[in-house]
Image (tube, rainbow, N blue to C red; front, side, top):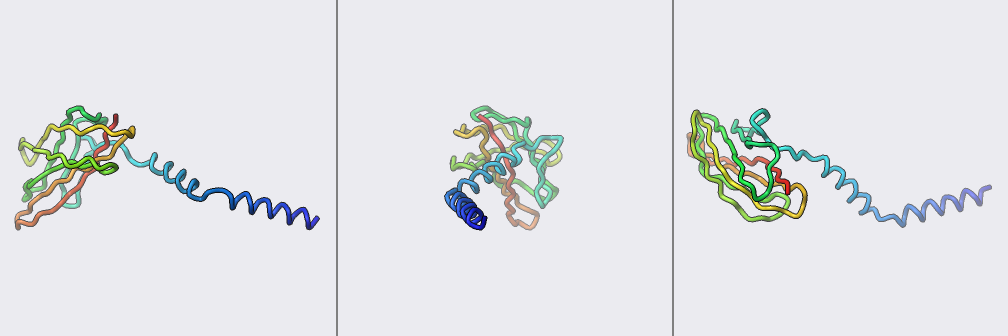
Length: 147
């Protein structure tokens, strides 16, 4: 009986030693990546920065190579110095975004981004804001684009 347990233990050890742990890690990271948020900020649920800047997109589902509208509402005392989009999951360069003032600190811009090989690509909207003292603050917001 002791020999049977010994052989069973050896077999289990060999089988578990032969499995590639990177496959297990890779599979679990794929599962966690697929559960990441891939919903864009919309007017009903805008993204907010620590200093109170709000960002939302005209629609929740944004397709690559299709024009879409971005809205920002800046806190009082802040002005927009510059804005750009850059690829978060893939290097796609930088796309400058030019906002036009509307009313009461609300600004809008129309832009588009390129397609990616993945079904959903994460981009990053970077806003450089200047406060009343002339200090530049950088705020980043997610943007998810589908193909």
